[in-house]
Amino acid sequence: MPAPRRDTDLLFKALADPGRRRLLDLLHAHDGRTLGELCEHMAMTRQGVTQHLDVLEAANLVATQRRGREKLHFLNPVPLQEIYDRWLAKFERPRLRALANLKRRLEKTDG
Amino acid sequence: MPAPRRDTDLLFKALADPGRRRLLDLLHAHDGRTLGELCEHMAMTRQGVTQHLDVLEAANLVATQRRGREKLHFLNPVPLQEIYDRWLAKFERPRLRALANLKRRLEKTDG
DNA sequence: TTGACAGGCAAGCATATACTTGCCTAATAA
DNA sequence: TTATTAGGCAAGTATATGCTTGCCTGTCAA
Picture (cartoon, rainbow over the protein chains, first blue to last red):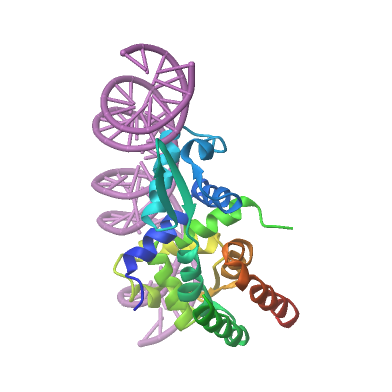
């Protein structure tokens, strides 16, 4: 069953902001960071960063976990894979389609 | 040489709107349509559609060509491939990386 | 040449988005 | 306890975005 369109929209909207893409990059480089650590790399107030992280969390791209008074942030790459599978793959040139399908099949059995 | 960040931003912003994604779908199903033909499938005025197409053209996702008083629209999938190559591939789970790289290499020699 | 048809231009508007500032609460360390 | 540290909440603001209406300009067919 394909994801509802609203999920897709949240996902693309989340990716539309350069600051949010930067946050994903930061988490990709080093996962499980606190809000404060992430703020050190963003040229905006803590609240601004929080709001971006909220958007990423709504899009299911970031998961969080409390540890005492800290909040840890983790990257979830699955929705990105969904973008590729459901959206980018069909725009590929036909001669690449077969290989893309193979890749997708391998992922399903393997992951 | 990687695309400047502004290009990346135009691209993600272009994809952020469901109407624009719909237009890409329409062109994917049947390329080279006129503005009027595209409008028949969009629940908004012609000007609204024009503005969306302008955004897609600025992101290099759509190319146009005049034919008399008509304007033909063509889908350009290359930027979507760039999203995958430069942005999605690095977030993939490691065991998929090798296959992704293979796919990319095949594309370079083949296409 | 005249009318209809395809599209372009520009202003206007309402909502969404990306921030900010100010204050509040909870966990920890002294 | 008390001060400090990590983060949350809410309101305010300026700009961006999505879309409209009204009018103008080319192209083609009669």
